[in-house]
Every structure is written in structure tokens, then in C-alpha cells.
Length: 415
Ligand SMILES: Cc1cc2nc3c(=O)[nH]c(=O)nc-3n(C[C@H](O)[C@H](O)[C@H](O)COP(=O)(O)OP(=O)(O)OC[C@H]3O[C@@H](n4cnc5c(N)ncnc54)[C@H](O)[C@@H]3O)c2cc1C
Image (cartoon, rainbow, N blue to C red; front, side):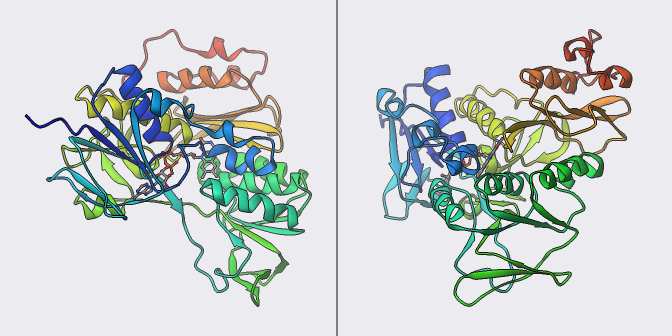
């Protein structure tokens, strides 16, 4: 009888390491596990890369997904520093760039995403940077300290955090985005407008409704020219215009891919030997009609646990309410939900500052919420959104009504 080759995980980061942990600790799986990663580092967490790690307040050890000894203690084999380049799902083998091959019974693909590249003249000049991994963050930390004029392209979550970090380090900071407000697609006009004010209050030169025409310079970046004709001096340009899922390996292996590896709500792909997790997936979600791609820490952690069950033939379902956190200018912003439509926004507080909460309602049902520096609120907001019960707008708006009192006792809608 041949020995079971076990489970191979491609992508040694958050979703992959969390899956390995759940396989060993939650399910008591005792077969072989191999974690393959193209980066040389043990699995680490990315959120601090645009915040504390960049600012020097978070050290390398704080980034670990699992304690370094976990892998040896729990017999998880590591193959780090070399990418997987070929995946044969029918033969159940994966090959790395150096020719090493690993057989498997089941494979988990957790290859994450990479920054979308800026396609304008001058985008390849020295001083134009992207941020995805630990090495990027270390280089950027040095560059931000040497810079005086920083231009951030893109006012999404990452761009907002980078602007905050740049200002904290004392740089003249300009943010350019074609949309009317930061985070416009997520927050809309009204709340996006409050976020605009936060950036401006912290001294950011926020150029909205404008785009990048070209990056100017001879060898290194010297300025950014915008579509409306402005020229902004820059010795560092940081691009945060979204991410592209790393689906090439899966696609070449014949898996169904459409803006991410397509999976069901148990993270099963179109091949029975393969499960996918984290940023690389576009998965069915019990709460939403169309498959969703969610690039958040909480999603990758949840996916790790769900994937472990599915790999072992014990599928559970993905957590219903997406959750994202961010730190900007010393405040913690937490956003819950993924609404496609809403017809009303209720706020607790007028300014997007400490204690502020916004609720997005669809036919009086809270479908999303943003809260700032409200410790413990996220759990209540998650329940509020998950139960999908109509809420009283006056109570939502009233800061003296505890969030706990808003949670419905009525039976919840099933999704
Ligand atoms: C700078 C930054 C800040 C963030 N801040 C926040 C935040 O504040 N809040 C929040 O909720 N989320 C945040 N996120 C998002 C969060 O970090 C991601 O959702 C999470 O890392 C996704 O985990 P993952 O394991 O799916 O993918 P990843 O973390 O991208 O890991 C995938 C791994 O697979 C590797 N890989 C790719 N292809 C191959 C291959 N062929 N062979 C081997 N290995 C391969 C990649 O190099 C990588 O190491 C942030 C992300 C970044 C980049």
C-alpha cells in the first residue's frame, strides 16, 4: 500500500498557515502537510506593513501568523523561497521553479494577490513603489524617511493608510484619486466626504476627481502630472490602486477562474482535488447573490479554518458578515458588511472621529456599518447585520442607546 502523500498548501501566508493550524489543532489531522511559499519568510501578517511596521512601532516578531516553532512542533513541512510553477490536478503533483515535486491527495491554493500596476508614462522610474510584502514595507519605510514630497496614488484603504503614515513621518503628502471621495465605492458620497475631511484635517493635499497623466523625472521620480494639468513635486510615489489575484497557477491547472479562483461556499474549486482560500478566491457567500472577492485579514483567517474542514471532507460554511479594520492617524476604523445597495445612511455623530458610527440601511435593514474607535462595537454590529432585522433609525442615531439594545430579539431572517 502506498503512503498517503497528504495535503499540500500553496501560499505560505495567512490563509495557508491558518489552514495548516486548523488541520492539526481543530481536526487532529495527522497526515503529511507541506506549506509551499515563494517568499523566504515564515508566514506573516500583512496589515502592519502599511501601519506599525512601516512606522517602526511593530517589530518583525509581531508579524508572525503562528509562533515559529509551531511548524516543527506540529510536523508541518516548509518549502519556502521558491514559487510553485506547475500544478497537475489529475496526477496530483505540484512542481516548484527549482524542479522539486510534491505529490498530494488534496491541495489548497492560497496564493493571495499582488498590486495592480500603474499604466502611465514614467511608471517605471525609480521612486515609484508598491506595497504588498514585508520587503516592500522595509524599503518603503526607508524611502518615506528620506522623502520630503510624497504622492500617494489611490485613496482606497491602502492609500488612506499610506497617506496617514506619510503624514505621521512629516512628509508633504498628496493623494490623487479620480473618484469624488476616498473609499467612494465602499462608503459612498456622504461618509466618504467625512473621510475626506479627516485627511485634510491631518494636512493631506487630497486631489479628488483627478487622475495621473504621467510620472515625470529623468532616472528618479521628480513630479506627478495630473489629468487636469497640475504638476505635483514628488520624490516618492506610492501606488495603491488595487490588487490582482494570483490565479495563473490555478488557471493553467484548468480550474475555473473569473476575477479569482471560483469556489462554492465551502471553498471547493471546480476540481475535486483542489480547495482555494483567501484573497485569491471569488467565492459563493450565503449572504450574497453573486460570488464575492474579499481582500481582508478576517476573510483569510476564516477561509483557513473553512478550507481545513473542506480538505478533510467535513465542509462548513463561510462566516456571513465580512469585516475589515484599518488604522489611520491613530484611530481604528472598522467596517462590516458588503452591501450592493442601500437607500439610507444613519450616523451617530457628525464627524468621522472617536465614537462615530454610520449604518447603511436597505429597507430599514442594516446592511453595513463603519465605526471609529469604538472598542467592542464590532461584535454588536456584526450581529445587527447578520440578523438582518429592521432597525429603528432614531435609536441607531442616538449615541445614548447602547448598541446592545439595538440587537433584535425577533427571529432572524435566514440567508
Ligand atoms: C499592506 C497591506 C495592508 C493590509 N492591511 C489590512 C488591514 O488593515 N485590515 C485587513 O482586514 N486587511 C488588510 N490587508 C489584507 C490582508 O493582509 C489580506 O487579505 C491577507 O493577507 C490575505 O491572505 P492570503 O493568505 O489570502 O494571501 P497573501 O497574504 O497575499 O499570501 C499569499 C502568499 O502566497 C504566495 N504565492 C503567490 N503565488 C505563489 C506561488 N506560485 N507559489 C508559492 N507561493 C505563492 C505569495 O507570495 C504570498 O506569500 C492588508 C494587505 C496589505 C498588502
